[in-house]
Length: 81
Image (cartoon, rainbow, N blue to C red; front, side):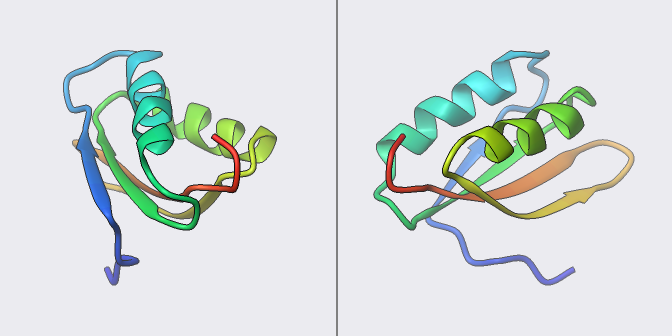
C-alpha cells in the first residue's frame, strides 16, 4: 500500500467510539490548513464516523486502509477547523 505523505500521526488504538473521532478533531485543529493527519484506530465504528465527518466538514478524507486489527485514515485539514 502506498500511503499519502502526512504531517502528524495520531494513534487512537484501544479507544472506543466516539473517542477516535473526537481526538482526531482536536488534532486537526492543531494543524495548518492543507496539512495531513494520519489516524490509526482499532474501533470498527471509525469506518462510519470518519467518512461521515469529512463529508459534513471542509476536511478531505484522502485515503483509508484497514486490516484485521486496525483502520487507518489520512485526512487533509480544510480551511476552517
